[in-house]
Length: 238
Image (cartoon, rainbow, N blue to C red; front, top):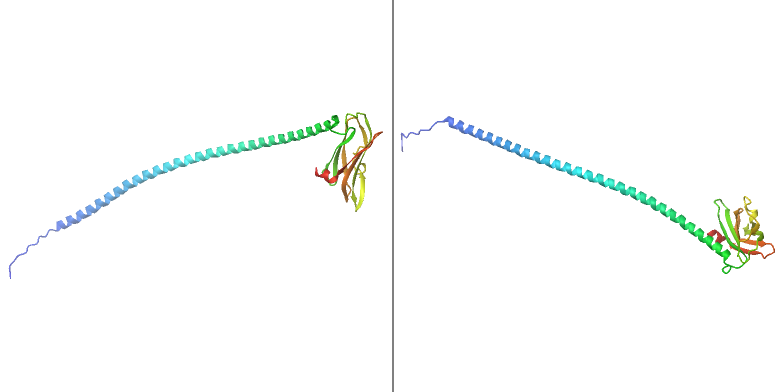
């Protein structure tokens, strides 16, 4: 057993404060460095964000310009289409009118050919055409009759023409003279021509009358009568 051993301990309180202060200083600098680094990073982010915003703004402006150009192109195409459509309608209407005129001219050619070509038609008097069409009012009809004489027999024709519509009224057969059912007395009866004669007018059928056919008879002076019958159904279908 050892006795009388002396233990000496050093008492330095300033070292303790020095370590404590040093730790606080270190923490302060670490915090300061972190803040500085954060500010730098934030600055970079702001610059990058501003750059991206500028890029997006430029792209948006370009898209708006393109959309405006496309809109103008569409407007031009629509106007062009309207003009083309109008031009097409004009051309189509003109073509239709020309076709109708050509058809009328062909009918005229056939008409005159029938007069001047005895070999194609029987010499003498002919009931060349008879047309009947609705006149826009109920039971009212417009008619056109063309009579001709082939040039082989070019004597002046004098006489009368008779026109009847045959049908049924209240279950009984009935014949109506055109002159009796003409609302404005437009039916002529006298024949007076050398080459051809047209007659036209209107007739109005009475209520309840059902037409079956139309009979035309030319009765020239000192010459044989010529007659022709037309089915009402065929006339109405033309």
